[in-house]
Length: 152
Image (cartoon, rainbow, N blue to C red; front, side, top):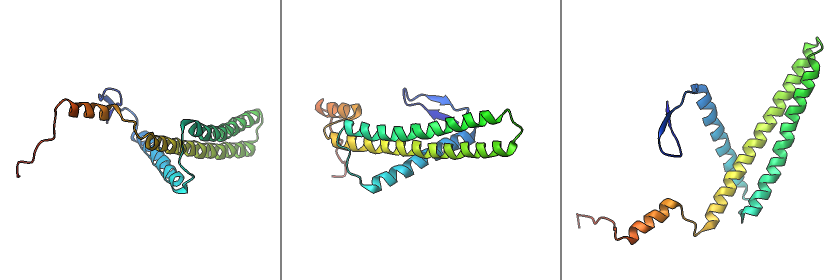
């Protein structure tokens, strides 16, 4: 399958398995779902980049705590390697799985907030125009006009 790149609009060969592509698509669906939840909460509009940074810094702290729990679980599992206790290894593997699930929730939540902050800042920018919008405006100034309807 070919996937268009963002930089030059050129196509590149995507050699990933379809399951990998599906996982990426489903992750984006999860982020969009979390974004809808964040928007529905109506916690107020993010007014500026400083406020947005504060929100993301708080989400990053939660993500770091969850990631630390994964690391701690791995250290605990490592200590189990020298013993013959497979039951304890199963419990530690389940603990790592739970910590990873919590990490995923924290990451998706942070991604949803990042989208929300970007949306709010973009809407609040008002006079901000994308390069394409600026180009289109210059085209109008150069004498180009909309085509007239021939039926009139």
